[in-house]
Amino acid sequence: MTVTKQTLTEPVAPPRTSFNPLVLLGRLSETRYWAYFLIIPSLVLITAVVVYPVLSGVVISFREYRLNRPDLGTGFVGLEHYQDLLTDRTFQSALSNTIIWVIGGVTLQFALGLVTALALNRGLPGFRVARVLVLLPWVMPSVVAGNIWALMLDSRLGVINDIFVKLGWLDTYKAWFSDPSTALPAVIIVSLWGAFPFFTLLLLAGLQGIPDDLYEAAAVDGANPWHQFRFVTMPLLRPIIIATVVLRVIGLVNSPDLLIILTNGGPGRATQMLSLYAFQTAYLKFDFGYAGAMSVVMLVLLMVFTIIYVRVSGAAKE
Image (cartoon, rainbow, N blue to C red; front, side, top):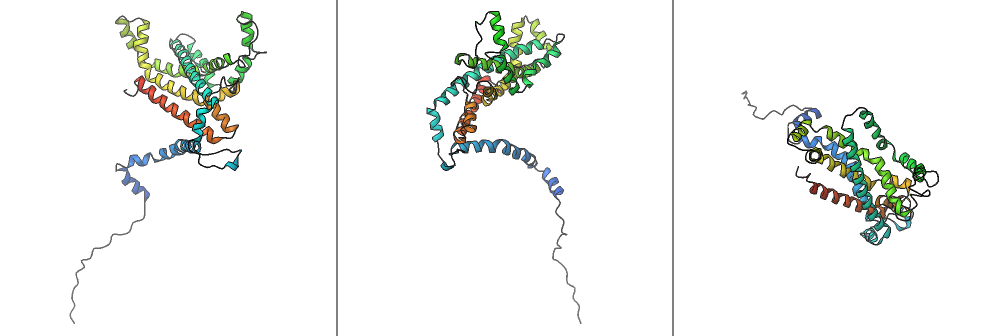
């Protein structure tokens, strides 16, 4: 019997290994896709908290969405809500009042905040305590602050009316929030008291970050205090000023809480704002479709303002 040897030329299969996610992560970390993998949790959070609510509000603005009229359904109405805004006199009054409210509020708050920051930057004795006291209006809840000011400006028991009458500035007590000519200025003053520490805090931090050597060099070159402020302080504070103004404008446009407490949009439409009107339309009239359209208009206006303001101020070039 003949025995022949057979040579094995077939490849041997590698041994099976169990699935190990740590090994896969290790291999992934050595590729250029690792950075994209790390930002996935942030993208999911931003989508859930920011992107989805915004898109949901935009979708609602194109639909009929009245909670007190379920018989109307939630059908698609297209641009009907936006067309109604063009003929809505309350919306037009709210838009003009919002412009005055934002321009007047931001201008006064920034001016007072800058003056206060310059004063607190002196480092005089007792100013550390003053820095804490200045922040009290900012940290106080707007509900508490609004009710305090409503009592102080009351036409019967208000301490401010009492002081003005005793000083001879007023003949009789005045109903500040019931007079269309004084309601909006009074609300702006109340907002000024509560919000100027926001500018003070951030501008003071920027002032303390400016080296003293720059002021000394400017003084050697013959610059007086005004020139130092104009050519040293303000240019170095510009990034902070741009950021604070944008944030404060967004805050004023989107915050109806103080208005709800003090005037609720009255008397008439003297203090009606876009945010307040949208709030009333959604939670008093339960017309979320129309309120959504107003919210989209506010979003577009804020985006346009931010883009124009940043470009004009030169922050984009920096």
